[in-house]
Image (cartoon, rainbow, N blue to C red; front, side, top):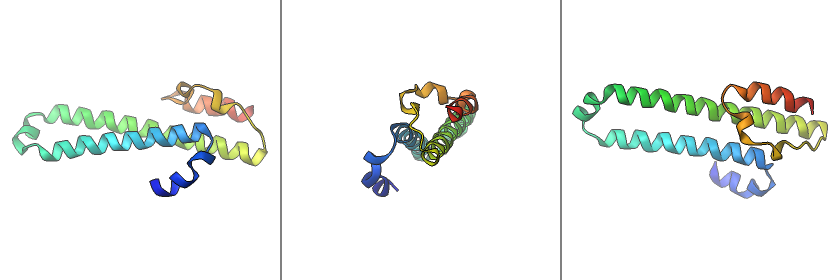
Length: 112
């Protein structure tokens, strides 16, 4: 996927490129955590079971957030392309798309 995107990266709207990069970094972070976890001994994993479960829940939340941001950014960019509108979505801070504000930000941006 990275090779396919690399050829078209410069053509992507900056907001979409940021959301793809954030999603990719989140997945790589989870991969690194899981890789380190599999390298540890079973008794270490058993002893730190609660901490590992909490970390997995945190990673699940981060992955959900990154996925939601990517979906909404993609939807907004597609809608703007279809409408022919050149909105200022790329000038908006990414914080508008974070966590529970994602749905509200997309509703506001779609109307602009």
